[in-house]
Amino acid sequence: MFCKGHVITIIKMRIKKNIATSENGFIFNPATGDSFSANHLASVILAAMKNGDEVALIKHNILEQYEVSTEQLDRDWDDWMLQLKEANLLEA
Amino acid sequence: MLTIAVTGLNAHDNPGPGVAVIRSLRDAFANLTIIGLSYESLEPAIYMDGLVDKTYQIPYPTAGTSALSERLQHIHEQDKLDVIIPNFDSELFNFIKIAPWLASIGIKTFLPSHEQLASRDKVNLLQFGKKHGFMVPEHRQINNLNELQKAGEDLGYPLVVKGKYYEAYVTYTPDVAQKSFHQLSAKWGLPVIAQKFIKGAEINIAGLGDGEGNVISIVPMRKMYITDKGKAWAGITIEDNALIELATKFIKNTKWRGGFELEIMRDADDKLYIMEINPRFPAWIYLATGAGQNQPGTLVKMAIGEKVTPFIKYEVGKMFIRYSWDQLVDIADFQQFSAFGEIDRSKINA
Image (cartoon, rainbow over all chains, first blue to last red; front, side, top):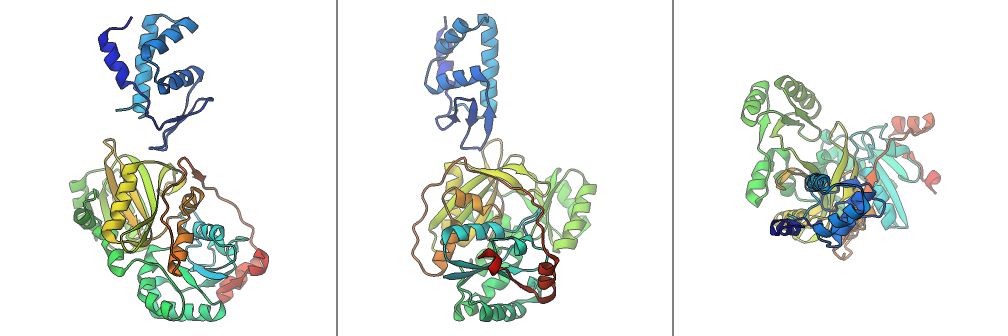
């Protein structure tokens, strides 16, 4: 499903270790003091990312549970990554 | 039983640190008398229940050290003072000057030296940064409109126009910069400072040094809500080793003695600029106390000669949210303080 190029990308998509997340979707970055509210799906994905799950597995689980095409999911995923990057939540 | 005198009771929109310092002291010591030292009769903390036991009016810093000494001598005769914590930049020069005399009559302080005070002054900050290896935005001392115009051309807009002691405005046009210059020079005197604008996240660090280069306490705070005067109305403690290292370097290099606040701007490239160094506790110092590092209480312990252990941790994610409160005051209390320059509220606090 994913080529090698994707695997390299996966390694870069780690949530910073010190980011605190709660079950109700509250995200806190202790290094900057920023906080965010995430919806249910975003919370689940964040928890999976923090858990070290690979992107392929996370996407697979979303495709299993939601009526969404692979293409749409990829587009949304790219947007999600941008949001995480702008929020300074991803490891450099 | 300790009797501690504290200034900075002006808990208004540009608040002095007095209330936060007193709250911290009350947390640190069970048996405590707080003597408020006030410049004006409308400083809110004079009338706040459970905070200040007795308040005395003291002369403005411009009256000089003789007037201050005379007044403190009188206060000391009434209520034997153990420690004084001055909380205004503008009064520190005088308090440092009379510190040996205060010590001779049994009143302890824990203050920086005149050299330390001058080195971090706004007008010397750029030089200070170069000497100690800190990033400081370029600035100019402004004494007239021609110099302001030149600074605008050199540093560009937006331009930060700052008062000698307090207040700063981010100005986007020469007209607004001129207006700010007139306002600030009329209020705080010359020179006014024009500083290059740095865009970024505003972070403050409250710290305490022992005067020998050792760190006693460092707590960084990110401003979450900022008033039009640039004051933090809400903030949160954060965890960032770069900030701790910066404050540690400041304490080690300057051998800072007492409380201080570093005002930091972190730009998009994570560069940390020192915007200002305040030579006393900030108005938000109770956040540091709530996060586990009671700096005012520890300063008092050092002032009276107790050995203290440096703090090594604090609670990250502790927040403060300031609020305003319409305090009802009996005209008799206001009259008492206005007419006699003294008010005893210890019975109310008991």
